[in-house]
Image 1 (cartoon, rainbow, N blue to C red):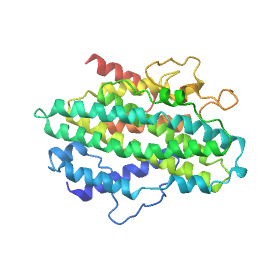
Image 2: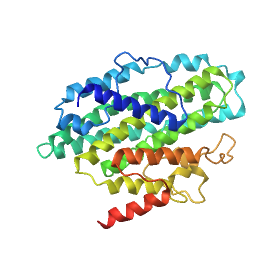
Image 3: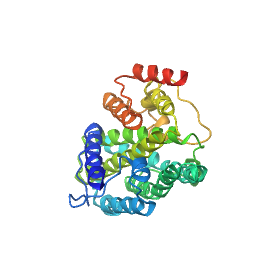
Length: 330
């Protein structure tokens, strides 16, 4: 299969993720002329198509360049006097939530380097996939910095107190290492949930520039999810990583009281190793945030991602648990 096939499949996958997240595909820099894509069959691309790392890394770079946007310009175009209390809450919370993304990207680069070298000489196609993952994390990190700085600076303009240096350092705790397939699956779900959240918020804000900022950030999250699905699928396709790990993460999210429900859970685990802002979401006055919206959309997105990663289709959290238990027993 050639490059045209990869572009066609990837474009269809992108469209489906945007549809499920509730966000439109429009955004600065997108063009139908030889549009760069996220390669959906990455392990096959290396193993069967004999594509090289330089080729794949250039495609990643083209994609990143095609989607560049200016956070400074968007923030400066927002009119603070037009923002409602909900708008202010979204800006304040998003700035703090995005502050915790950098440690995850830092962890990914470190973990990918270790795993890449573990597979060299054993499965060179897999080693190349994981090296592509580590290299792509630089773009993920840069795009997340747009989100963090954009919302944080806007919050300062709105009169919110800045995070203390101690809080920033605490938020920068690097996540502990885990099985790579579990990590990628978790990140694909997390980015999808973030995209849905931003899609929901974009429907309610009045200021057009803030709406544009939120939609741009949400579109970035969809593309990040697309990448994590591609990398996770490649690991599963190699046979070196067990699909049960992806199902374990899906169960963790979808079970009653699972990660999907964020701060609305009756019990939220304390994690001394790292900070997940959405677990303890509060507004500036210290009030608990409203329960997450669009839960069914988020469930559907997670099930869609799980199928793309493992090739196994489930239609409910119970089916996910049943398949997971079957896979654990094999």
